[in-house]
Length: 253
Ligand code: 13P
Image 1: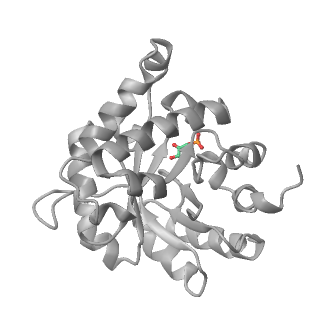
Image 2: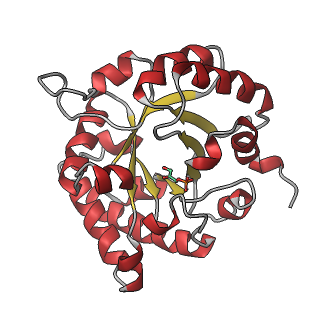
């Protein structure tokens, strides 16, 4: 059985004080006792979030990392720093990083190896652009993103690997992939992982869906066998709405 994972990606929202306030409001609202829940604040708000989460079973994660351990890389943070700050997870290759900050499949691969080296759980984001879906090349794009991202990774190291399928056309647009579209993409990704890292690992791989996940669509998404969790942007910023998402198991149909 795969453990489901629900992740808040706050992107560039919430100061340290706002992050702590969110956690105070959010924790008492959680009824889900079985799935993993992780909050990824902006780097500057990680310490406040980690402190506020102390004593809870929730984890914290970073939204990005540099692949070197340290060095003259102004503005960057490294995998060991993320661990030292109390994080268990890190998001890698988010489409906004690819679109606005020049991240490529090759840098995703370097970052993934750096994260695995220090025992972080990497959440590697893949997904096609609208033009790519319309051109009928979604599967090719996903295969390329995965095959480059997983180069030189051993099956043993990769046990922590988590993948988020985030179709770029569904991010922040209110347009969600249907559960069937998401499930199909997940099956393509799983097959690619099987090729790169072996069948056993691919079967156990935790795969998240991201893109306009809301309290209104989480139940339907999580009902898909292929979907093992969600990476939530906008709807994770409000404690009530993120609680409604993580509590999907007790939602009324
Ligand atoms: P939205 O949930 O705001 O569409 O963002 C999705 C996302 O990019 C999560 O990483």
